[in-house]
Image 1 (cartoon, helix red, strand yellow):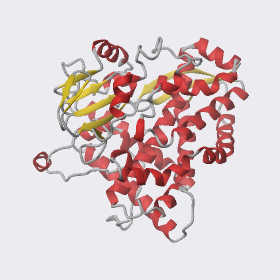
Image 2 (cartoon, helix red, strand yellow):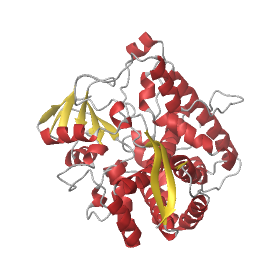
Image 3 (cartoon, helix red, strand yellow):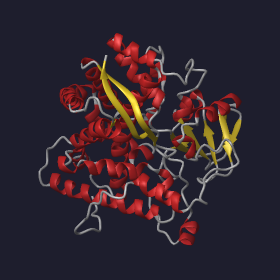
Image 4 (cartoon, helix red, strand yellow):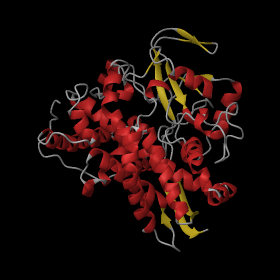
Length: 444
């Protein structure tokens, strides 16, 4: 791997991404990303205020695709039905994921002229989820053995032990933040194990994940450069780990697996950085936010909490339903590689299609009463929260295992969790989750 230009890297833990964005919005109240087009669901206010559901429902009632001519992220198609999202994902040659066309998020890829006008250099993060075949195949195969059924069986005991320790350490009779004490602690610890990351520094993984996953920051002059600096610090840390593993070969952590792979051991710095972002955000934000969504959902639907408490046999299906209900990543993006027609609409080469998993998982034609949590839902596994086709989340089994163990360990302790204070959601159109969830633990 090519080296990064850093001698003595410094690793910051402040400011947090959401705090930096909130400070900017407070200092610039004139800034708004809300527009007149009601179909522009790129704005983050509808997610932080949890009022996105009727907007998508109205679009689904009108049709599976909707064109948005003007938005802060440029013109794009909203793909909102379950059938349409799966259809687009099933055609990876026609609808590309490649970073060369703009990648997997709603962010627009600025032209060279636009970059020159802004006085900025091009900053792109190639990663295997943002690649097309055949390169995607080789890199995905490198990390896939870490997430096989046999690998999951090997990890379950450690996951159960750590989950039990975290739950046993929670206070009773007082309010605390479930996100900080449980969701972040469990998922960050799991990432540290997967990477062979120094345990004492594991909090850095959450810090970097938040900066990497907030697409809206890239719209803010100054914060976009700060985001780049944070990711370069992340890459500098991991490069030190890379060099350590190069001098002690034979490990089975993700970094060692990359190092031993012909498909990944010659990555350029930004491609290395991109794959780190993919694995960190994919491994952190998805599971972390579903762990919080489970607690919030069971509190919001007490009849479902009662069903969980009375019938632990529902837990495997409850995991799938909670993933559907929460949908921790709101969207993925594709780019048309040629002119085509899609569900009666003419799609031009270069058009950006935003696949709204949030909407697909609330599609009334697939899921009855979709805005309700139903842990006995017969088709809960049809959710698209992990994507579909060749880009389906490589770590899906691990996420499901962590969530199942969490519910099983909560049940074995007869633990009931009540929302008892502030609920703060993530201000973003990509990561869909909770920043804070104040709760109190009792028993059933």
